[in-house]
Image (cartoon, rainbow over all chains, first blue to last red; front, side, top):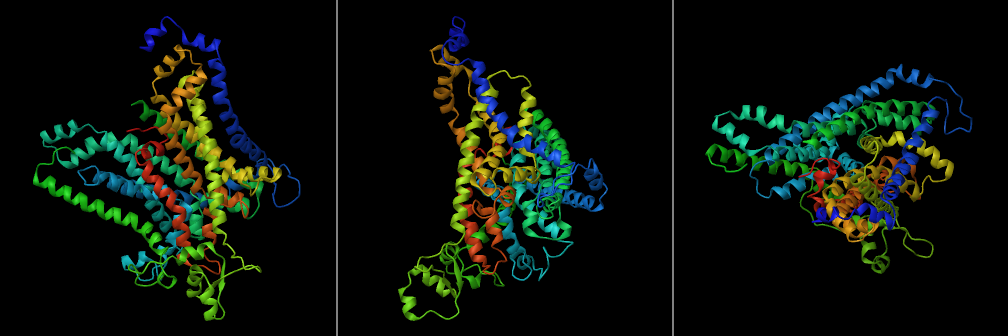
Length: 301
Length: 319
């Protein structure tokens, strides 16, 4: 209807005659957001880039001295920082692998004829919507060696979770798996429901085994969405701060964000922490880049 | 899956139902434990074996909102009789409500932090969704040079780790006096949610047929009128869903709040954990505070259930 009228009357020229032109509306709508993000995200980062080349300490009135690349050099040669990165990597692997197994597994179960499927799915999604800091805190009670329900239910006696240096990181990862498996489940369900039914029917006619069906039909078709979930969770697990910070204070759970927080706001090594922040930032941007490529790929399908 | 026919399939389905039920129970157990602890008498919160059946009490909530101190001597019968019902609950727990010299009840820190959370989350949501809606319309309808790069730039601001952004922001806020203020947090949360809101709203805007506005333009509307009278009402559901997501993110945020606030503008997420291990550490009170704090999000999750997929994937995956 509208297209037919448009051939006789160009809407652009009319709206330009009255009111604002499309060009100025476009600028009015977009520029404030870009400016806001530049002022409150990019400018601060440039500010801290400057400080990363100094020995500035925010706790002392002494002026910052330019030290060149010294902060970066020292950080990259510091075995303790590397061990923080190693802890972070271990944490990322344990929690993301756990989330994929649990999340994808539950999605496979839910992708059948389940009564009350909608309600159960929503209930299962609840953990990821809640505050990590506040719910995470409560896991302290659940993990408690003497009266926690986890030890009681599993019959573990007074097993130490959070105060055991070897166990604490896994305990944090378990809580993270509890919170974020639902995310992997949600995305997997979307992928599973998009697999065309006729493929399964064809496989059944060919008497394909369920093993074959899963690896040759289900998995390849769900893979792109599953990939998005994995990259996104990897990025988030890499940045993790709240859970590990609240649950334990073991040196074995000092992931890179916690190290950064302590360096900046407890030890007040402002200049050096800015340099570390930049090292972390570059890593995050690299993962983000991969993530966005995948997002666009899936969008195009 | 469509038709379940064979008996093997049917028993597999039954297994799946049992599996889903078990998983649901495990996943909900921690949340149930928070909710039930919030209504327990203090002496039943940390028992072995865990107390599952009990007479629910409201006393944890009374304790949550009031400032209390340990009772040295039991209250006299007259004191007890003169006290309102909620104060008796505190007496029963071996504590008393702290009163000022004029007899006014002293509040705990919780209501204040809860209000701060509300102020910061609501204001930043309005700002982020407002700006995000305009920007999303701009990206959806107009040709923009380097559109993909700009969108990537917008998204990447969301991916920055909070602690990384917090270091320079802390220094800048200190210079201009925004540390420990509502506006300080509101600005940070708005910036954080803005990119999300642009991405999500762009998806919703893309779904509104261009023809609607074009018809309106032909009818003599200006572009602005068409936007406000045609596009915005069409986008209402999307705006509401985006707003709820932004609210939840701001409501739950911890790291910025921990670093940027300490007393005046502190929100609930850094406050609640700080109460553990303090002299009056009482898990029932912490559970009560947690319960009230989680309740709005739990309700919102149910309202949002059909938009969760879209929101969690930044609008990339729609069903």
